[in-house]
Image 1: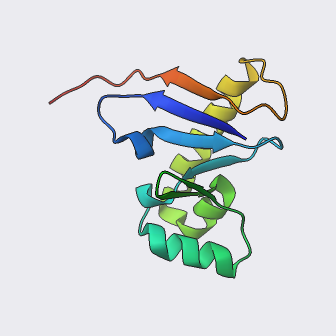
Image 2: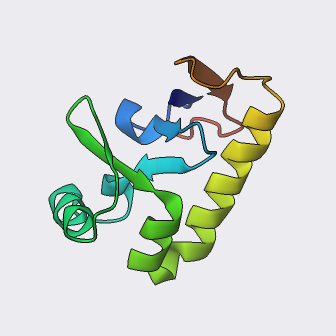
Image 3: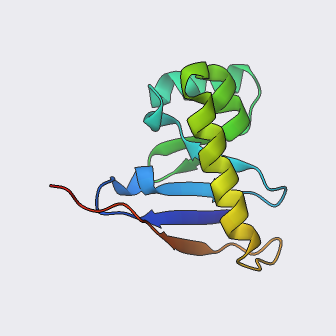
Length: 109
């Protein structure tokens, strides 16, 4: 499992974090799409693996897309982007890394 952090001054750290497992499954923060507690309970009920990290719950992108159809396109785009960037990183399977991905977003505060 690899922890991926998007370097963005616009987002809280937990929103900047995603995970990629050895099978290429992307786990995104449940709280970005609704209640983390509800998502965790639904995932457990559906027998979906989740990642707990620093008090936040991360679920597989396809499951999140199914649970949040209005955001399905965005979820799929984010997951595909993470997979594409990680394909270029030359990661070794089974090695836990934290990778920082530079964001193109600008601070507009």
